[in-house]
Image 1 (cartoon, one colour):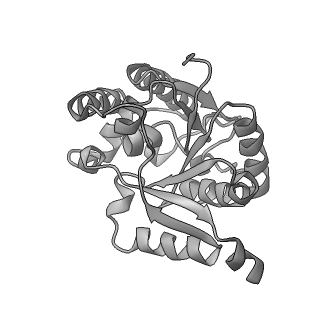
Image 2 (image 1 turned 90 degrees about the horizontal axis):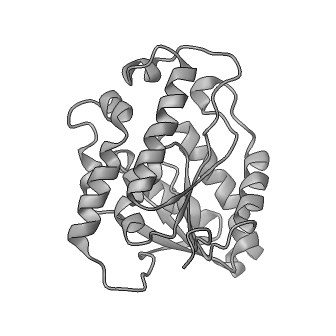
Length: 236
């Protein structure tokens, strides 16, 4: 398959989320695309606590370095980067759900994807915003195969995953434990090695999480197949 024709499309709130949560899967899908939502720096440079933890003196320095880190990580996994022009909440310029949903929908339609992966939207405001936008467009794009991935690190917080599953059910979206299929038998050792190499490319973010603060990224990845319960949605 051509490298310009990805079939698997992963929506990543920040530069590292797709690799942290789906790196092993990406290692077995070298034709995949990762769409990073909050890939733009703030218009005016600023200083934030998280960027400082990551070792940066300013937001602009942070975003330049993080883009380079992401390029390296995705190159390891032979993944195609797609980046949207939105800013993370730490830069005080978040898009509306509807604006983000419209941009995501247009971007997905412009790809050749047939399998979409969205974050469960755990803990972080940016993750929740992406989750809301994906839930808005999923029913309109239910001809595609949809999965949610549990965001590494945040999935460890007690009750968060369960709350999201209830939330999905209330929206008329059924979540069933399942992983996206592959065309070949997975090579788990290779996947593990490639994911570890890709994760290590995000040096600044690992620094910010601190020693052992990111151990969960190397645990087994977990996915949920998402389908629309048409009858339930009509009842609402």
